[in-house]
Length: 310
Image (cartoon, rainbow, N blue to C red; front, side, top):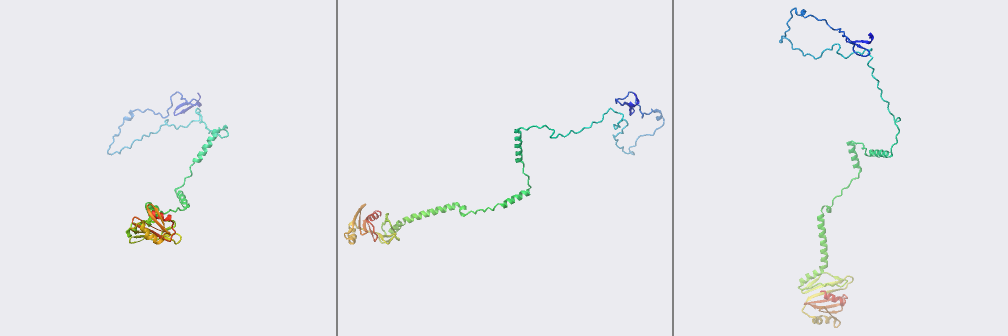
């Protein structure tokens, strides 16, 4: 083995080719010769006992120990050691471009699915968020853009529907009562007059067409007079009712013959004997003498209906 292939490290010889130590006793450059103990103990030595009151407290012993030769790993690599190969240089892989990828035809269903997903993502994409100040300004602008809404004031009818219902009912009752009073006013007037005259006078239920009650019903002691007048023209007639003890013969002799002579007509109707003459008439019923006189051209049939309706 040549000297060039031997490397000495810390006194140990190594083969530069294999890196193995060479058998043999390593040369220790730091070894010391042994010193006999007698030379140290022959002379008196000073006492090493410590006086605790005088001495200072010893400082803590550091665990740091100096490194001796041969214990450090910071060893310079020798150029003669060729066993360790240099570190390999790692190169980054080349970027793969779209040109290097193989062209694969997409399926129609896959293309359709991709389009649908793109549309959904576009629809679902959230709108850009606005600040609170922008939202407030937009709300104020929208409120000012709207025309002012006029609030309709509630009228009395809307605020008090029950009172309106009561008023309407009262008006209807008053109208109906007024109409009934107007229709029955002649009968009521005759009853009042009959009570004042002291007789049982009545109002005829039949009234000739074209004639109506003229003025209030008049009365005197034991007699009631009802006046009628034509609606168009000046003709009129009166119905008089008075207490009497006469019979039909007395009416003929005392009233009809003096006024009409032999120019009269006698009619028997519902147990009544009615004498008509020149548009006038006379009859007696229940102790009351009825007479019709005036210038109205009443027919015999109209006189009979008047007499039977009282």
